[in-house]
Length: 443
Image (cartoon, rainbow, N blue to C red; front, top):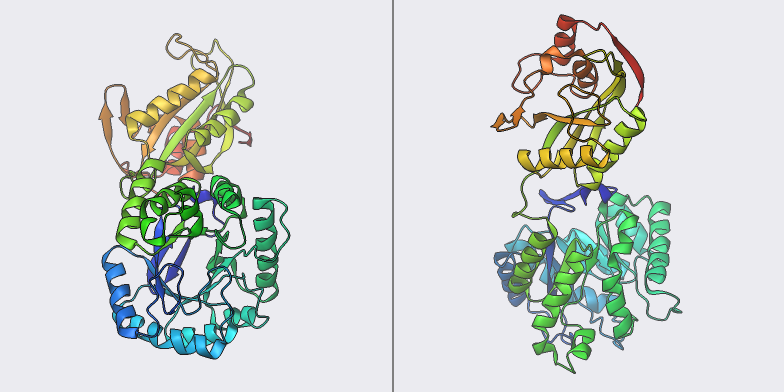
């Protein structure tokens, strides 16, 4: 998933949000007397600070402070009153935590005051489209922007199509005002102008919004759709329903979940991350170096197909050499084409070797005489900087420094000192010579 992001990470107050590494949890602090969820603290800054501190202890990565109820039918609050509510709360929260703080507002004057009080981000439920001055505030302050699509008052055509159209309008404003994409987070707007059925469809189709290349925030916590599905469950009985929507949002591509019940939803997020293959339970990524060869059939097509198949198996190619041709050994077979790729993988060495053998088989390789012709030959040259010695697998490959057809492409993707070998590929190539070696094409 990380390669799907236009910008791999966001850093706020020294805290890195590396998108795709795990799900981040945003805790809600309501400085309102009339929150739909029943947790409004009004202007009690001390209580808000205590709540935020407890959320941090419970695993929150971010605190979101709002001063106006966004429940359906709520009247727009005067910006001066909204600022009177949120500014003291943000000041109090900032005094007890270094977590990023966003202000949930669509009024430019409130956003500016909140940022001055210690907030880092603007969470605008109208995607910068309600107050004409809001894009300018975001641009001038350099604030992070959480931009939501709000369907209220808009004609419905298609759930994802309408969200995408709203995002495109917001992104056009960002371009106009030089708000860079590396500080943008998108929220599809669960519960804002949708029927319960449309909200559920939004979660099912959330993955379709990944093509925008920006991180997604989803806020389902305690909302009326959950009560509707659960037979009219009141706000206080929506915890399990919220957990289900959090888990499914994560499975379908959410990067941040905005919640009231932080400790419980942190656990739901961690479990969901483990199931989908991210978070602390996932093995660290290792960069492996893999040799590719072919001398049967359409040799270049075989090499390119093998490179593609690596990606299909979750082995992400990050660098590739050009293709080199060499005379065969022994000589009673067609010439070889050879290349080398570097790829990021979470597979352990035996699992990676099994994946390479699977690719060889898919391309038509079958048991044959040793050193015989083959449509595909894939070998692990290096596995990070680790030495591996297992039955059928030695890494670094024991004959790397003897083979010019490996050293030539290897020098293109690993120009420095080779892991564990104390020499460069170029130096080793000069030692063995380039007889029978010819540059062929791009991979």
